[in-house]
Image 1 (tube, rainbow, N blue to C red):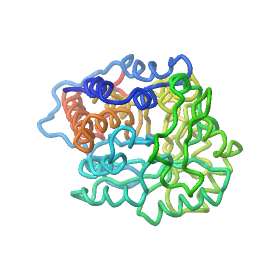
Image 2 (cartoon, one colour; image 1 turned 120 degrees about the vertical axis):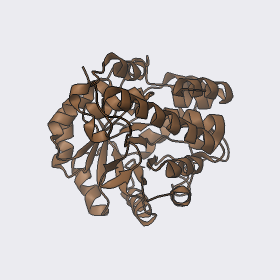
Image 3 (cartoon, helix red, strand yellow; image 1 turned 180 degrees about the vertical axis):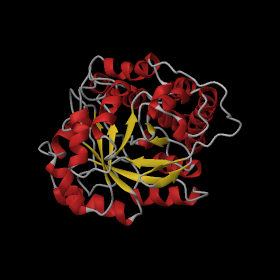
Image 4 (cartoon, rainbow, N blue to C red; image 1 turned 90 degrees about the horizontal axis):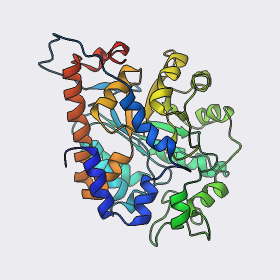
Length: 360
């Protein structure tokens, strides 16, 4: 296995059908799912010649914290569908890689256990962990999640804003998606962590429609800042004006994301949305991007278009499914090695040297 696509093919062979379809699928006709990857390939690189690239430095900072590479791990739910150790295995691999893990609200593992696993394998002070937040109708539950994350040493709160309801994911509907016995949304109180089968639809879509607050607005970004001392990032932005609003309302970061093509189908690919958001934010907040990142050249293009770092979700899941912690390590190692070579061949020995003129 040499590439993320090789890991994907191996994972497709070992995962149960319901789990694979849950991870791999997009909304409706899955047009955005496919376009997320294709959009990175539409961009072309313009390498510089005769630059000393004898040594390269892939490190950078995110929210003021050093990371070993500009590849972070996006929040993905229900990781114990891929491997019994789930999010804990991912945390160990991410800690050893010296980068950032973002833990989903819909985790199968306790956020405190994930924090301990991440700390146990960090070899330096590089890296960190963020907590992704869905706003529940019960604001007390929401506040408790944020307070627990802060107490457990998470470095930021990532507020997902593109999912007041879940998109119509046809594969999940056909499979009647539900969590198997023994798996729950582990960080929720009793009675709020069950994702049960619902006849004729996805149990997860029903859970989200029932539990989450569909009335949140920009005021809630400010409210969140009153609940925690941690910086807040807004995830799910694909428009420049919304990126600017996020900065106006105090967000420390914006994540250009369309939820991996799983929400509104035919929405703009994140590679295409990124430059507009970067220009609109104009340095008032850090900008990140996810969606379709499968190659080191994709990361290089993301940096050139103005992202502070790129986040990957499915590549981590494929590695986790294939070989647990070692598989996640392998996935991150693939991307790091590819990015290192791409930077060398593009004439950019450091992350700071990756500028917009490298992309056509």
